[in-house]
Each structure stands twice: as C-alpha cells, then as structure tokens.
Image 1: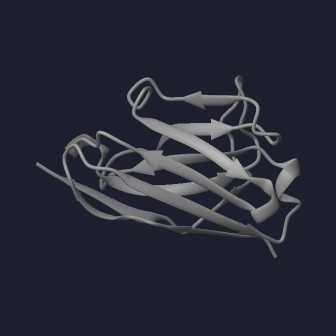
Image 2: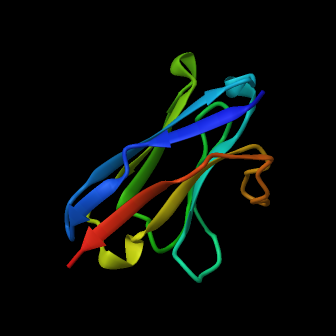
Length: 121
C-alpha cells in the first residue's frame, strides 16, 4: 500500500509564501525520485519540480525557478516544496508524485490526492 499525502496548501496573498509537505508510506522512500506537479481547472497537469532519490539533484520548471525550492528528508519519509514570491498564476491543485522523475523523464509511478493552493491578487 503506497500512500502519498500532501498538506500545507491554502489561501495566500500575492508575494506571500507557503510550504507544502508530502508524507510517503508503503515504499522505500529513499529509493524513489520525488516531485511536484500542479493543475488548474480545465488545464493540463504540469511539472513543477523534482528531486533525486538522494536529494543531490533538483529540477525546476522555468516558471518557478528562483521562487520555489524542493527538498526531502529521507529519515522522515517526507518531501517539501517551499514556495516564495507567490503569484496568482501559481493557483492550482498541487500533487505529490513518486518515481520516474529525472533530468530526462517526468513519468511518476505514484500520485497523491492533491492540495489546493490559491494566490489572491
């Protein structure tokens, strides 16, 4: 039973910050690449950021570079997304994902249920 549970979403003003968490269970966490995707209503899900299984490599969508930071604490089986300088266009449901994420692929094996992030003007 693999479970990915996101938390930390909410409503924030433009320019503000949020920190998302993804708690994983049912898998050997340190053996999986991890990442974040987001999806706005009526639009396709898009890649946001990913991190290698060891935490030594990170990748970001151009739209969030310099504002978002992905990290993981393998001892806690938890991944994070620190989001700073938030913009209204960041509004979306953010999904935690596990596996299949690297510099050359963005095809997760497992998904979380999502957490809503809303950025007001």
